[in-house]
Amino acid sequence: MSPKSFANSRLSRRDLLKASLAIVPMLAACTESGETDAPLSAARFDHGVASGDPATDRVILWTRATPPTDTGSDVGEVVIDWLLARDPGLSDIVLQGRVRSDSTTDHTIKIDATGLAPGTVYWYRFTSATASSPIGRTRTAPVGAVDHLRFAFVTCADFSRGFYNAYRRVAERDDLQAVVHLGDYIYENGAQDRVRPHQPPREIVSLADYRERYAQVRRDADLQALHGQHPMIWVWDDHEVANNAWRDGAEAHDPATQGAYSDRRAAAFRAAHEWLPIRTPEPGNLARVYRAFSFGDLADLTMIDARHIGRDQPVPPNTVFGDGIGAFTQTGAFADPARQILGTEQEAWLAAQLAASTARWQLLGNQVYFSPLKLLGAPRASNLSLFVSNDKWDGYEPARDRVLAMLDGLRNPLILTGDAHEAYAFDVTPDPNSLRYNALSGEGSRAVEFVVTSTTSRGDAPEGLSISGLLERLQTGITPLLRLSNPHLKYLNNRLNGYLLLDLTPARAQAEFWTVPMVSSITDEQSLDAVWICDDGTKRLRRG
Image (cartoon, rainbow, N blue to C red):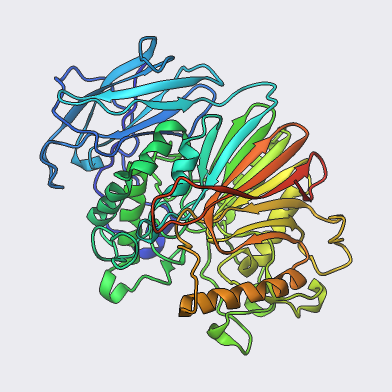
């Protein structure tokens, strides 16, 4: 077996559009490298280990071999050993090898360990001349008839906002097939005055900046525990680059002070592919992360990119409220069928993936909430509804309609969403305020959507008479209005951080919304806030 290690060459400058559509082809990105006979190097494993993108016969293994003097400059090649075994004592070895890394990949290493048995738990470790990594645990995807699967879904982990208590609770579970991360794995801001300061102590822009931010996050013990226990399937959202990003720019990027967005984006993409255990779909195009996974006959998981590769710039609000409230109607540019959120190539790929699925459940990993969310609800034909956010799928309604048409032919479509810093459960219908949808029975729903709350980014629920506390009370007071205008919204928690546990059987999909009481300090507490179920073939929610 020839192991694969991950490497990148230097990025050349491109104009904004070309760089955002397809990052410069790099011959060494994710290239295969053979085993080396070079002697082992001295190195530490300060950032733990990770595995990801499990298939039926392979899984990505990841570590960073930190040189003894890690100055960020080229300190030469680092050579380490790796092995994968069937037992936690690492005596029943299945694969092993020796690989090299250097500063072109920030000394990160990825092994695509192939030839494995399906539905099997393995353990792995990396070794240098001076240290051994923690022992990691991973699992391949099953084949054939599968009667039970459990996944954890996480998102939005702003390091500066708090401790990763939710990650630790997920790490403590030993019955998960995989952890699905729906984006905002890092945040690009320079916040210093929250729970814990970001490094570097500024908004990150350069390749060195993004690498340093990933390195800081990956030293966190709770995140290391999660990665060491479960394989991760990750896709980015906006904060892996810049807030409110789209195909050719970002609301939070200022070219006058931060340089060309194409350079920043290329640096962010490169660092992400180095530091995350992703099997890069196109080594010459780091802008692409959409990809698909199968788990026997029970579930297919399709991970899309609704943020970077195809998204048109959001249209400004078109009501008298302007940017103050941000409400808009589905008129004018919002109704333009040419506007894209996935892009034509990814949209066609998604249609083909969904059409080919024969699994009982079709899972769609998605960044921003798909279901309509309105301040004022009215039947669609009236064009009187006031929508909440032009950054979500509401801002791209014709594109959403095309995806809804793809879902119509599926038996059990489930949309799993991040980004919102709140937890929701929706019946998915394009017209929730019309007679075509019955809010009491769920008749007329065409799919269901579960939105997972943030890992930390919501922060602690404010208390007392502080400004934040008063704003929180105001927001809570709006909840009844949201429910009135959005009868397809079955569950909302806009106060706490946590994670979502999805339990699948042939008969039903059960979503468990778990919360942690705080992120400003370390806690081992968690609570099951709600359970919502979709029965096989119904495409609608019921309370568990």
